[in-house]
Length: 396
Length: 62
Image (tube, rainbow over all chains, first blue to last red; front, side, top):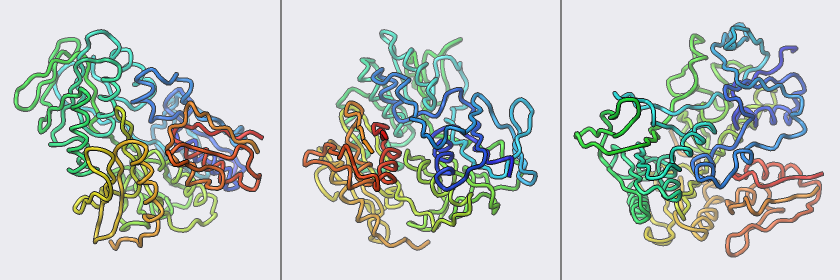
């Protein structure tokens, strides 16, 4: 087993995979290959504390654990291909890296708008370097920002821009309410009101047709012909999986990489996937494989996948998803899978105008709770966590 | 084992309370309280608590 384990991807999932491989008893070589030049760092502050300048970039790095001191980090290196039958990956310098075990942890990248117009002035927020570049632009005086996409990242960026003193912050989305896809109409309406009260303008039900400007963006043209003046555009229109390097191996890469209930890829005992690139069935719900883009998932999947890879035979994978989002002076805190219960949404406590706790149901069973507000709402949500853990699985 | 929480970083997410309830608790206002010198038998759960902290505010010494 001289080749050791190759971890493809050096973000949180890759880091936790290396740590949990050691914890699960793997003493052989571990090589982590990452495209970014940075050691693994924490991404949630990018759209908030890093963008606002409250967190120095250096404060984002994860603290190294003694057990992973001998892990080899190959940063600034991209994997371009994999041959699973031969147990090798190809690096961007053309060299082959053999492995005994492979962890797929290459994550996601932002989807980009394919519209006519200049590229300069258009940003995404996924990496440290993205956040730095956007911060430099948002702190220029008198700048006008258009955020395309009213999801979590878009709304967080809009809130941070307002806090930075940006006078014109406009969010555009084809859907009628912000964050309504994952959270439903009730919270979507409450969030729209809160953002508007704090200075964010929304243009909803509108798609983007193109960008104006010669060398640099000066405006965003909407599908109805309206043009919004913009010095800076932030595209937060979802993400796509970094799986091109796995093509040609007969894998299901239709949305991330499909795994079994043990996070194994392609039925191979020596290949596992972790983090938001993994599309896995969750025994807690209905057996339908899904990708989950929550902060907690890289750690949850890495722990389970590491045991699978070293043959420690973990039980069925059944994480309780959890996410949060800080926007302006309020927090969203979620436990469970609200998106599976959008057809039956009930206020469990409080009032959408203030602190509120919302329950999401499927087959009359509580599958997720989301709190909106301050500390009291988050505490209420936490109280439901144990209840969610005790719910029987949904049938497929 | 010594546990140090950077209270300037802590934003009271409470994930550590789920991971290590013997060490981390929330007071009535939802603010974090913790045992700074827990028994070594609790090391695994304290390490888990440090890993799941969204702010990475928990440090284990010794």
